[in-house]
Length: 316
Image (cartoon, rainbow, N blue to C red):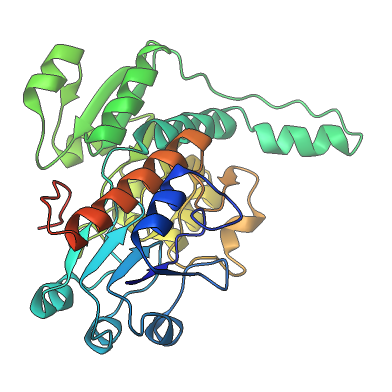
Protein backbone atom coordinates (compact mmCIF):
# COMPACT_ATOMS: atom_id res chain seq x y z
CA UNK A 1 0.00 0.00 0.00
CA UNK A 2 1.27 3.44 -0.95
CA UNK A 3 0.58 6.59 1.08
CA UNK A 4 1.47 10.23 0.39
CA UNK A 5 2.28 12.57 3.31
CA UNK A 6 2.51 16.30 2.56
CA UNK A 7 2.08 17.80 6.04
CA UNK A 8 5.40 19.60 6.51
CA UNK A 9 5.68 18.68 10.20
CA UNK A 10 5.20 14.98 9.50
CA UNK A 11 8.33 13.78 7.75
CA UNK A 12 11.55 11.85 8.47
CA UNK A 13 13.24 15.01 9.77
CA UNK A 14 10.78 14.90 12.71
CA UNK A 15 10.66 11.22 13.73
CA UNK A 16 8.04 10.12 16.19
CA UNK A 17 5.60 7.36 17.09
CA UNK A 18 2.94 8.45 14.57
CA UNK A 19 5.37 8.27 11.68
CA UNK A 20 6.63 4.87 12.82
CA UNK A 21 3.05 3.62 13.07
CA UNK A 22 2.38 4.80 9.51
CA UNK A 23 5.52 3.15 8.16
CA UNK A 24 4.56 -0.15 9.79
CA UNK A 25 1.11 0.05 8.20
CA UNK A 26 2.00 1.19 4.68
CA UNK A 27 4.41 -0.58 2.38
CA UNK A 28 5.53 2.70 0.80
CA UNK A 29 5.37 6.26 2.20
CA UNK A 30 6.09 9.22 -0.08
CA UNK A 31 6.86 12.60 1.50
CA UNK A 32 6.48 16.22 0.45
CA UNK A 33 9.60 17.09 -1.60
CA UNK A 34 9.11 20.87 -1.40
CA UNK A 35 8.55 21.58 2.31
CA UNK A 36 5.49 23.78 1.64
CA UNK A 37 1.81 23.37 0.71
CA UNK A 38 1.52 21.81 -2.74
CA UNK A 39 -0.56 22.81 -5.74
CA UNK A 40 -2.43 20.84 -8.38
CA UNK A 41 0.37 20.04 -10.85
CA UNK A 42 2.64 18.94 -7.98
CA UNK A 43 0.07 16.72 -6.25
CA UNK A 44 -1.16 14.73 -9.25
CA UNK A 45 2.11 12.87 -9.97
CA UNK A 46 2.82 12.34 -6.26
CA UNK A 47 -0.60 10.75 -5.72
CA UNK A 48 -0.19 8.21 -8.51
CA UNK A 49 -0.84 4.76 -7.04
CA UNK A 50 -1.61 6.14 -3.56
CA UNK A 51 -4.55 4.74 -1.59
CA UNK A 52 -4.02 7.12 1.35
CA UNK A 53 -3.02 10.76 1.61
CA UNK A 54 -2.18 12.71 4.78
CA UNK A 55 -2.64 16.27 3.62
CA UNK A 56 -1.20 19.50 4.90
CA UNK A 57 -2.43 22.85 3.61
CA UNK A 58 -2.31 21.73 -0.02
CA UNK A 59 -4.71 22.92 -2.71
CA UNK A 60 -6.67 19.74 -3.42
CA UNK A 61 -8.77 20.54 -6.46
CA UNK A 62 -11.39 18.55 -8.35
CA UNK A 63 -8.76 17.69 -10.96
CA UNK A 64 -6.40 16.33 -8.30
CA UNK A 65 -9.11 14.07 -6.91
CA UNK A 66 -10.43 12.90 -10.28
CA UNK A 67 -6.95 11.98 -11.55
CA UNK A 68 -5.96 10.13 -8.36
CA UNK A 69 -7.58 6.88 -9.41
CA UNK A 70 -6.29 4.77 -6.49
CA UNK A 71 -7.10 7.27 -3.75
CA UNK A 72 -9.47 6.09 -1.01
CA UNK A 73 -8.91 8.51 1.87
CA UNK A 74 -7.62 12.04 2.47
CA UNK A 75 -6.69 12.50 6.12
CA UNK A 76 -6.16 16.18 6.93
CA UNK A 77 -3.33 17.00 9.30
CA UNK A 78 -5.41 19.77 10.85
CA UNK A 79 -9.06 20.78 10.98
CA UNK A 80 -9.66 23.08 8.00
CA UNK A 81 -10.91 21.69 4.70
CA UNK A 82 -11.40 24.96 2.79
CA UNK A 83 -8.59 24.09 0.34
CA UNK A 84 -10.12 20.70 -0.43
CA UNK A 85 -12.92 20.13 -2.95
CA UNK A 86 -15.25 18.14 -0.71
CA UNK A 87 -17.89 17.79 -3.41
CA UNK A 88 -15.42 16.17 -5.77
CA UNK A 89 -14.20 13.84 -3.01
CA UNK A 90 -17.73 12.75 -2.17
CA UNK A 91 -18.59 12.23 -5.84
CA UNK A 92 -15.56 9.95 -6.25
CA UNK A 93 -16.13 8.11 -2.97
CA UNK A 94 -12.95 9.42 -1.34
CA UNK A 95 -13.34 9.63 2.43
CA UNK A 96 -12.14 12.88 4.03
CA UNK A 97 -11.09 13.01 7.71
CA UNK A 98 -9.66 15.76 9.89
CA UNK A 99 -8.29 16.38 13.38
CA UNK A 100 -10.68 18.85 15.04
CA UNK A 101 -9.81 20.32 18.40
CA UNK A 102 -6.38 18.78 18.93
CA UNK A 103 -4.59 22.07 18.21
CA UNK A 104 -7.01 24.23 20.18
CA UNK A 105 -4.66 25.01 23.07
CA UNK A 106 -1.78 25.92 20.73
CA UNK A 107 -3.93 28.24 18.62
CA UNK A 108 -5.46 29.85 21.72
CA UNK A 109 -1.96 30.49 23.10
CA UNK A 110 -0.86 32.27 19.93
CA UNK A 111 -4.11 34.24 19.82
CA UNK A 112 -3.34 35.67 23.27
CA UNK A 113 0.31 36.20 22.33
CA UNK A 114 -0.76 38.26 19.31
CA UNK A 115 -3.29 40.22 21.37
CA UNK A 116 -0.58 41.20 23.85
CA UNK A 117 2.04 41.82 21.18
CA UNK A 118 -0.25 44.20 19.28
CA UNK A 119 -1.68 45.88 22.39
CA UNK A 120 1.79 46.62 23.78
CA UNK A 121 3.62 46.92 20.40
CA UNK A 122 6.15 44.31 21.47
CA UNK A 123 7.87 43.70 18.09
CA UNK A 124 8.22 47.46 17.47
CA UNK A 125 9.76 47.99 20.89
CA UNK A 126 12.04 44.98 20.57
CA UNK A 127 13.33 46.12 17.17
CA UNK A 128 13.99 49.67 18.34
CA UNK A 129 15.72 48.57 21.54
CA UNK A 130 18.02 46.24 19.59
CA UNK A 131 18.89 49.11 17.24
CA UNK A 132 19.96 51.38 20.08
CA UNK A 133 16.84 53.50 20.37
CA UNK A 134 14.83 53.99 23.57
CA UNK A 135 11.28 54.79 22.36
CA UNK A 136 8.31 55.64 24.52
CA UNK A 137 5.22 53.76 23.50
CA UNK A 138 1.85 53.86 25.20
CA UNK A 139 -0.05 50.62 24.77
CA UNK A 140 -3.48 49.47 25.91
CA UNK A 141 -4.40 46.97 28.61
CA UNK A 142 -6.40 43.78 28.18
CA UNK A 143 -7.56 43.97 31.80
CA UNK A 144 -11.29 44.65 32.08
CA UNK A 145 -11.81 45.08 28.33
CA UNK A 146 -14.35 43.34 26.11
CA UNK A 147 -13.08 40.51 23.94
CA UNK A 148 -15.31 39.19 21.20
CA UNK A 149 -14.73 35.77 19.70
CA UNK A 150 -16.27 34.91 16.35
CA UNK A 151 -16.67 31.18 16.76
CA UNK A 152 -17.06 29.33 20.06
CA UNK A 153 -15.74 25.94 19.11
CA UNK A 154 -12.76 24.31 20.80
CA UNK A 155 -10.41 27.22 20.01
CA UNK A 156 -12.91 29.95 20.87
CA UNK A 157 -13.60 28.26 24.20
CA UNK A 158 -9.88 27.99 24.96
CA UNK A 159 -9.41 31.70 24.17
CA UNK A 160 -12.37 32.62 26.38
CA UNK A 161 -10.88 30.66 29.28
CA UNK A 162 -7.56 32.50 28.90
CA UNK A 163 -9.37 35.84 28.75
CA UNK A 164 -10.79 35.12 32.21
CA UNK A 165 -7.27 35.51 33.56
CA UNK A 166 -7.26 39.12 32.34
CA UNK A 167 -10.69 39.80 33.88
CA UNK A 168 -12.05 40.46 30.40
CA UNK A 169 -15.73 40.51 29.49
CA UNK A 170 -16.15 37.73 26.93
CA UNK A 171 -18.73 37.93 24.16
CA UNK A 172 -19.19 35.29 21.49
CA UNK A 173 -20.97 34.83 18.20
CA UNK A 174 -21.38 31.37 16.72
CA UNK A 175 -24.12 30.22 14.35
CA UNK A 176 -24.12 26.94 16.32
CA UNK A 177 -23.76 28.51 19.75
CA UNK A 178 -23.17 26.17 22.69
CA UNK A 179 -25.64 28.03 24.90
CA UNK A 180 -25.10 25.83 27.94
CA UNK A 181 -21.32 26.32 27.84
CA UNK A 182 -21.64 30.07 27.35
CA UNK A 183 -24.04 30.40 30.28
CA UNK A 184 -21.89 28.26 32.57
CA UNK A 185 -18.75 30.29 31.75
CA UNK A 186 -20.37 33.72 31.92
CA UNK A 187 -19.88 34.31 28.19
CA UNK A 188 -22.33 36.75 26.63
CA UNK A 189 -23.89 35.20 23.52
CA UNK A 190 -24.42 37.96 20.97
CA UNK A 191 -25.42 38.41 17.37
CA UNK A 192 -22.69 39.31 14.91
CA UNK A 193 -23.44 43.05 14.65
CA UNK A 194 -23.70 43.57 18.40
CA UNK A 195 -20.42 41.75 19.01
CA UNK A 196 -18.29 43.61 16.46
CA UNK A 197 -19.55 46.98 17.73
CA UNK A 198 -18.86 46.12 21.40
CA UNK A 199 -15.47 44.43 21.14
CA UNK A 200 -12.24 46.14 22.16
CA UNK A 201 -10.47 43.00 20.93
CA UNK A 202 -11.92 40.79 18.21
CA UNK A 203 -10.62 37.24 17.64
CA UNK A 204 -11.55 35.12 14.64
CA UNK A 205 -12.13 31.39 15.05
CA UNK A 206 -14.40 30.53 12.13
CA UNK A 207 -13.89 28.21 9.15
CA UNK A 208 -13.52 29.79 5.72
CA UNK A 209 -16.61 29.19 3.61
CA UNK A 210 -18.45 31.09 0.90
CA UNK A 211 -20.53 32.69 3.67
CA UNK A 212 -17.59 33.70 5.90
CA UNK A 213 -15.20 34.99 3.21
CA UNK A 214 -14.51 38.66 4.04
CA UNK A 215 -16.91 38.46 6.97
CA UNK A 216 -14.67 41.20 8.40
CA UNK A 217 -15.19 43.62 5.54
CA UNK A 218 -14.37 47.30 5.36
CA UNK A 219 -17.95 48.13 6.32
CA UNK A 220 -17.75 45.90 9.40
CA UNK A 221 -14.42 47.35 10.50
CA UNK A 222 -15.76 50.88 10.15
CA UNK A 223 -18.47 50.24 12.77
CA UNK A 224 -16.01 48.76 15.24
CA UNK A 225 -14.78 50.85 18.16
CA UNK A 226 -12.05 53.32 17.30
CA UNK A 227 -8.79 51.71 18.39
CA UNK A 228 -10.14 48.15 18.36
CA UNK A 229 -7.64 45.35 17.76
CA UNK A 230 -8.32 42.30 15.57
CA UNK A 231 -6.51 38.96 15.74
CA UNK A 232 -6.94 36.29 13.09
CA UNK A 233 -5.52 32.82 13.71
CA UNK A 234 -8.21 31.03 11.68
CA UNK A 235 -8.17 31.57 7.89
CA UNK A 236 -6.86 34.50 5.87
CA UNK A 237 -9.90 35.03 3.68
CA UNK A 238 -12.01 36.02 6.68
CA UNK A 239 -10.58 39.57 6.58
CA UNK A 240 -10.50 42.03 3.69
CA UNK A 241 -6.79 42.81 4.05
CA UNK A 242 -6.80 45.91 1.83
CA UNK A 243 -9.66 47.46 3.79
CA UNK A 244 -7.89 46.55 7.05
CA UNK A 245 -4.70 48.26 5.83
CA UNK A 246 -6.58 51.48 5.07
CA UNK A 247 -8.33 51.53 8.45
CA UNK A 248 -5.12 50.71 10.32
CA UNK A 249 -3.32 53.48 8.48
CA UNK A 250 -6.07 55.98 9.26
CA UNK A 251 -5.98 55.06 12.95
CA UNK A 252 -9.54 53.80 13.11
CA UNK A 253 -8.28 50.31 13.91
CA UNK A 254 -5.76 50.13 16.73
CA UNK A 255 -3.92 47.09 15.46
CA UNK A 256 -3.97 43.73 13.77
CA UNK A 257 -2.40 40.42 14.73
CA UNK A 258 -2.43 37.99 11.84
CA UNK A 259 -1.21 34.44 11.41
CA UNK A 260 -3.11 33.64 8.21
CA UNK A 261 -3.39 35.47 4.90
CA UNK A 262 -5.50 35.73 1.77
CA UNK A 263 -2.39 34.70 -0.17
CA UNK A 264 0.10 32.37 1.50
CA UNK A 265 2.89 33.11 1.74
CA UNK A 266 1.98 36.80 1.34
CA UNK A 267 3.97 38.77 -1.21
CA UNK A 268 4.63 42.47 -0.68
CA UNK A 269 1.52 43.01 1.45
CA UNK A 270 0.93 46.66 2.42
CA UNK A 271 0.42 45.36 5.96
CA UNK A 272 4.19 44.80 6.15
CA UNK A 273 4.75 48.55 6.36
CA UNK A 274 2.68 49.16 9.51
CA UNK A 275 4.05 49.14 13.06
CA UNK A 276 0.60 48.38 14.51
CA UNK A 277 0.52 45.02 12.72
CA UNK A 278 2.14 41.84 14.08
CA UNK A 279 2.61 39.02 11.58
CA UNK A 280 3.38 35.34 12.00
CA UNK A 281 3.67 32.65 9.27
CA UNK A 282 0.59 30.40 9.76
CA UNK A 283 2.22 28.89 12.80
CA UNK A 284 -0.54 28.90 15.43
CA UNK A 285 -0.76 25.12 15.68
CA UNK A 286 2.99 24.55 15.62
CA UNK A 287 3.79 23.49 19.16
CA UNK A 288 5.47 20.26 20.20
CA UNK A 289 2.26 19.09 21.81
CA UNK A 290 -0.14 20.04 18.99
CA UNK A 291 1.99 18.67 16.16
CA UNK A 292 2.32 15.35 17.97
CA UNK A 293 -1.44 15.20 18.55
CA UNK A 294 -2.27 16.10 14.93
CA UNK A 295 0.22 13.55 13.64
CA UNK A 296 -1.20 10.81 15.84
CA UNK A 297 -4.83 11.49 14.93
CA UNK A 298 -4.26 12.03 11.20
CA UNK A 299 -2.34 8.74 10.96
CA UNK A 300 -4.93 6.87 13.03
CA UNK A 301 -7.77 8.26 10.88
CA UNK A 302 -6.04 7.08 7.71
CA UNK A 303 -5.37 3.61 9.13
CA UNK A 304 -8.93 3.26 10.42
CA UNK A 305 -10.47 4.09 7.04
CA UNK A 306 -8.08 1.93 5.01
CA UNK A 307 -8.56 -0.95 7.47
CA UNK A 308 -12.35 -0.76 7.23
CA UNK A 309 -12.77 0.35 10.83
CA UNK A 310 -15.09 3.09 12.08
CA UNK A 311 -13.52 6.56 12.06
CA UNK A 312 -15.24 9.21 14.20
CA UNK A 313 -13.56 12.12 12.41
CA UNK A 314 -14.97 11.78 8.89
CA UNK A 315 -15.97 15.15 7.43
CA UNK A 316 -19.60 14.88 6.39
